[in-house]
Image 1 (spheres, helix red, strand yellow):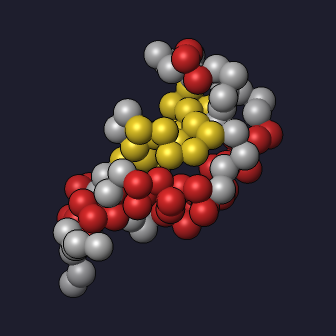
Image 2 (spheres, helix red, strand yellow):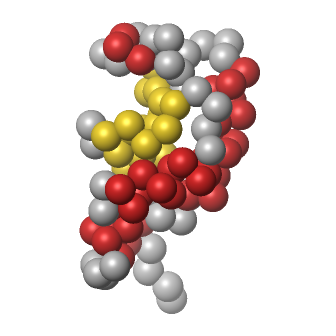
Image 3 (cartoon, rainbow, N blue to C red):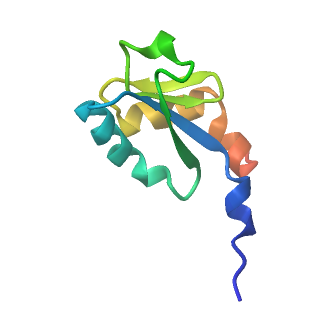
Length: 94
């Protein structure tokens, strides 16, 4: 029987959203390609993320902003490389 214990150890991406935000809903769908690598946690801008109020949706890895506004897979991957996130995830050198 396969074990899925590794899932709980997946790193977390946070997506800062607000209510009734069509761009936020589209952004969430756009992040689905990362579901196998990250836990994607939705957080409301009112839960301590007010600095992002005019920038939602915002994708965060720790304190690093990976993308905001109209989310782009290209921009997110570029920032994975910029911040060495892939290196950490896969324990590889580029």
